[in-house]
Length: 208
Figure (tube, rainbow, N blue to C red):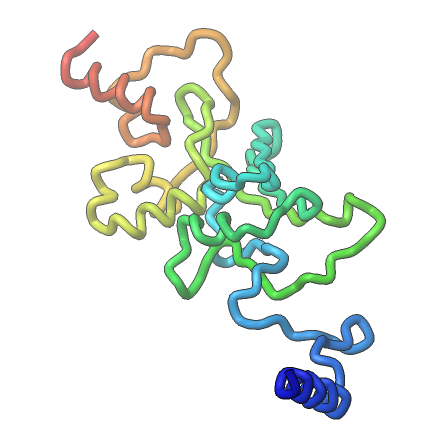
């Protein structure tokens, strides 16, 4: 029984000499270790507005709002830190995450306390591309350009990607109401959603 007691005494003396094991935060800054899951932040240069982060968020902490009345139409993604559980799914499943860059990244920031919940929000805005036939949302402009760059020469199989990536795209001036006018062959090189694109192709191949 003596040896365990001596070992405990040794640990007690060492603890007194070494000082406390824990950090002195908040009196002194604390640097979290690598891999710490802290505050998620959008990276403006890498985010393409694809909504992947919002779709995989288990806490539904990322809200997506498409404003078709704006000029040009915009998509706003907003992280609500008061709902975030810091699981890292947004960064892990980000479309642009290649191990080096990512559209949204978990930082080492952890001191997020506050009294106003409206402060715990971080938005990022993207220009939307809308169908010039029916006015439906096709996607974020930056997302389409990213897809075109990934496809390379294969992007020329899709006129919407060609027009968007080449910078010759023009957004629909007004959105269709009621039954749209019949799409004809001259609509082929316009920005169209998959449904309108199919209509143009079918009519081109099989006629009315």
